[in-house]
Structures are given as C-alpha cells and as structure tokens.
Amino acid sequence: MKFLYGLSLILSFSLSLHAQEKIHQDSVAVVQVVQNMFRAMKTSDTTLLKTCFSPTTIFQTIANKNGVIEIKNQPLQDFINSIGKQPSGSLDERIAIDKLLIDDHLASVWTPYQFYFKDQYSHQGVNSFQLVKHRDGWKIQYLIDTRRK
Image (cartoon, rainbow, N blue to C red; front, top):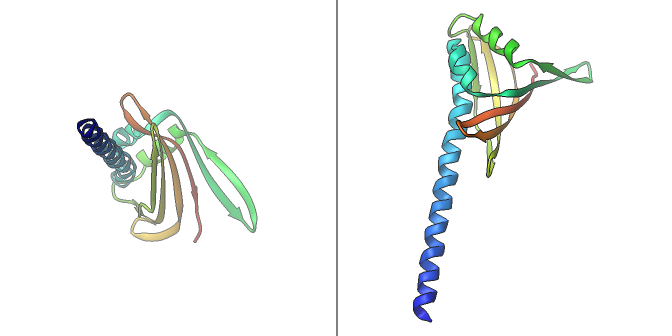
C-alpha cells in the first residue's frame, strides 16, 4: 500500500512538472510572437510580420472622438502594407507585457504601450491580443487597442 501511495505521489509530481514545463514553453512562444510583431514593425519587415498572424486575424482600434466611442476595423493586409511603406526604424511601439494568460490553445496578452514615430512621441494606450495555437505555432487571431495622446 505504501508503495502504491509513493508511486502515486511520484507520478503526480512528474505530471505536474510536465504541465509546468508546457505552460512555460507556451508562455515563451506566445511572448515571442508578440515581440516579433513589434520587431517587424520597427524594422519594416513584412516577411516577419506575416508570420505573426492567423489568416483570419481581426484588427480593431477603439477610437474616442469627443466622447463618441467608435470601433474601427482594419484588414490585416492593409496593416502589413502600411508597415512595409515605412522606413526602417520609424515605427517604435514600446510595450510592457502586463498580463499573460494561457489555456490549452488560447492565449491572451495585455500590453500597455507608448508609440513613437520617427523618434517623436505620438500616442499611448493598451493592446489586447488573443492568440491561437495552430499546428505551426502560436498566431495572433485578434488584436484590439486603445489610443490616446
């Protein structure tokens, strides 16, 4: 009986370590996708940028114009094209990863940011990412942000 109890404890501990390692690996991979997106923006690297997104990604911005809230949609390809038109180094979105949540194939990342255009402060806000784990890795499925001066 003691042997079975001990074996059960060892097995439980081993499974717990495996689960923790998987969560750690997923966390690192999710953060890497988000960081790659901002690295691609800063370097105007549309090839790297495309690797960050699901083919059905939804982009939205919450705009507040004189107290009127509007949600603006932007097609993924329009976003990629706009990044590709900028000189390398002109887009600098400085983020902090504030929250990271993962459950199975879904991840949520919350990143407060400050945005600089050609080294001049432009605006700040928060990005909210939803990522999905596909066969080829984590991809951004949904991105919505706030913007304020």
